[in-house]
Image (cartoon, one colour):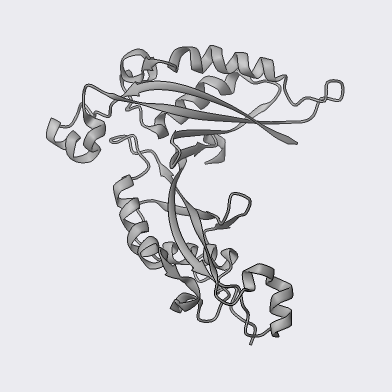
Length: 147
Length: 138
């Protein structure tokens, strides 16, 4: 009996949308205010969905404290109160929330979660949200600058 | 095919206890949720049905009928109740959010003809919810 369980987390980070393969003018055109040189920030709401059978012993899909610990260690400690542009994860990607949701999906896919990862969803603002289903094993990185 | 979701709230008490375990083991696994005096939540339930739009009414299902089914089969039994003590399913099943979602599915699914139950989403808190899509989706 498979159930999906979703846990919601919040973290704050700054970013600037800027692509080095575009001209300054093209950057302004593509990203608008998000291209302002000194960056800006968001309170991101992250939803992590895992799935699995309900344990007959506990009635639960997984131990929430274990899920929280993994997400804290692998995601929140890495991205909370960080400037995303300066992180190694975004050395070759624009830190759009599209790329961020894929990054977090890849990180969690490699992490010892207590249940099967179904996907990740991020609300950048109350109007914008982005969702990425868990990648198949060996899926190529997405979002890197074109070479 | 249209998916229609009706939201409802109910407030209920519960505790987590596996009778095959010692008190210490229950405390270790379930923490505060194992407190035998129980505690409670305001649950938010979202029931999503799937069906075709009726050519005459323009409805997937009459919302009043859906609301009555929801009240009769779920809310009247769950709202302002102690799930462990007053809802029969949980006499021998731990009333976790996961198990409550499955129990709600089993109560509603037989009564929704001509639409089909697509998903039960149950929030225990704003930062924790489960989705159940039924046995056929396994």
